[in-house]
Amino acid sequence: EGIDYNEVFSPVVKHSSIRILLALVAQFDLELAQLDVKTAFLHGDLEEEIYMSQPEGFKVAGKENWVCKLQKSLYGLKQSPRQWYKRFDRFMIGQKYTRSHYDHCVYFRKLQDGTFIYLLLYVDDMLIACKSKVEIERLKTQLSNEFEMKDLGEARKILGMEIERDRAKGKI
Image (cartoon, rainbow, N blue to C red; front, side, top):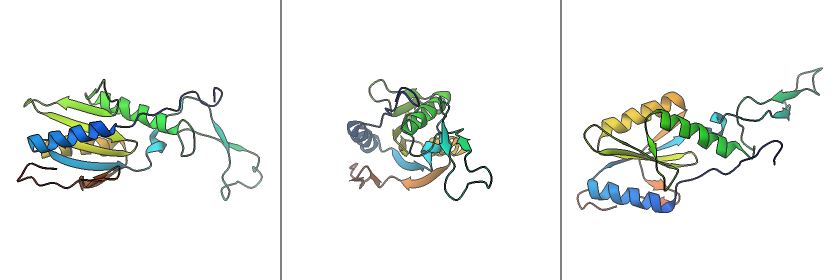
C-alpha cells in the first residue's frame, strides 16, 4: 500500500437503495431487469505500473525470469474493485446518467416522456428499472457494447433477496 496501490475502496449499492427501487417498481409498475458483468475486474484501467511473475504453465523457455507488465486490472489485485467501479462510473456518466449523491452506485436518467430509468450496481450485478422495455433494452445494448454482459432477464434474486412479484396486486 502506498507503493503499488493507494485506493482500494469501491462503493456498492446500499440495501436501502435496493428496497427503495423495489418500492418504485411496485408503485409505478416498472419493468425490472437484471444483468451481470462477466469478468468485471478485467475492465478496470490501472493507474500504477504493475509487474507480475509469469504464471505457471505459461513460462517461455529461456525467459523464465522475465516478468509480465499488466495492462489491465486483474483479479487478486487490491485495487481491482475500485478500478472497475471507476471505469463503470466513467461509462455511465458518458451515457448522460446522473450518479446519486446519496448512493454512488445508483444511476438514473430522465427520459423525454418525463419518466426515469434507474441502474443499481453491486460490484458486477445490476438492476435496471424503467417503465419502458425499449429504454431498458437500449441501456442493455449500450452496456453490452462496452462490457461483456450476461442478461439475466427479469430480476428474481439480488444479494440473497428473492424477488417475487404480483403485478396485478402491485406487490413485490
